[in-house]
Structure formats: structure tokens, C-alpha cells
Image 1 (tube, rainbow, N blue to C red):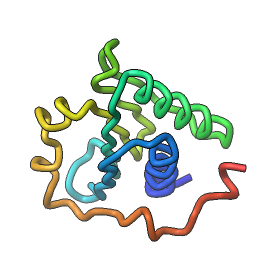
Image 2: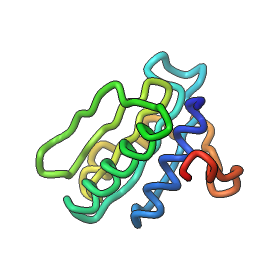
Image 3: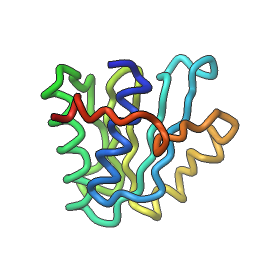
Length: 123
């Protein structure tokens, strides 16, 4: 899967788990860190856990393995690193605090809701 496909797949998975304010930024050409950032807000530690576990499990099932995972034990912020795509899951207060939208706001957004579904990959 490409970084874009991982980002869209992850956004849809987070949406299925009732994550909110989901945004994908296309960072290609803007940084060497990654090609795509996915930002998601989760309302609780259990919702954060459900989102990260489902994304990691479903991607692993189709041969995409995470490089790393960072974050705090309270579930207020977790980062999943898939190389070409990095997914951030925040509590509402930490999303406001880190304000990645203001840092990367000039990057193009991917309209993941109108992208072709990766249904075959999830089945």
C-alpha cells in the first residue's frame, strides 16, 4: 500500500470507531518526516485504544506493519508510524494544545471521504 492508501484506510477505520475531526495532510515535498499525517480526535482512552488497535490489526492483516508507536499511557495522545504515513490520535485538549493544524495548515488536505474505498483490503 502507498502512504496515501494507508492514510485513507486509517481515516476510514478511525471514522468507523467514531473518531472525529479526521484530517489527512499531504506532506510530500514539505518534510522528510513522512508523506502523510492523519489527525484524529478521540473522546476517551478506550476509544483511543480501539482506534489504534483496529488500525494496526487491520493493516497488519494485509501486510502493512507499523514501524513504531509513541504516546502516553493515559491515551490522550498516541502516534502510529507506518513510515510514509503517521497517524496521530489526540484527546480534544491535547489536539488543541499541539495544534498540528496550525503547523501544517498550508499542506494540502486529502478529501478521504471522496476517495475510492479500500474495501478489498479490509475484507
